[in-house]
Image (tube, rainbow, N blue to C red; front, side):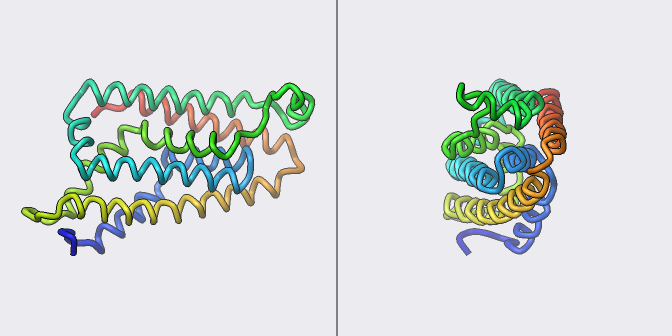
Length: 213
């Protein structure tokens, strides 16, 4: 079908990949903890949009060029790492709810808009070079050699990947948002949740910056 082979193995592999925590999961949990389920769901949508970009790039050969270029890989790696560390530091030093309320009139600590949440999720995914390498190394294994429908095969696999990822990420956002609601009346608990997720972001950023090809 569409030049795809071993589709059932692809579905199982994508499921296992999704349930393995990574930068995308950390970001969704962080947004859900900070602003609730809606923010987490919008972040998940942004991440899915990033996967769409990777799918299109893979289908038309751009990710292969990035994977082959050491310079391009290094640039994307450090930009992505800096972005993750930036998000983590913001969570670690986020003001407690009482301080937020006092500073709301000045715009300090204001919740991010849906557009900001979407864009942050989008760039968190797009600027992760490991996602680029995953698409360019994993997807070709499920495309029939010699098929004339390579682009269609990559796009179909990409669509399946995006749908499965969106479903899982939405589930993560819902669970994380529910936990946040439960502790919404306990600012000290939420503060430590923010710091924990923020520290995870910083750790992921450092790990990404020091990762080899």
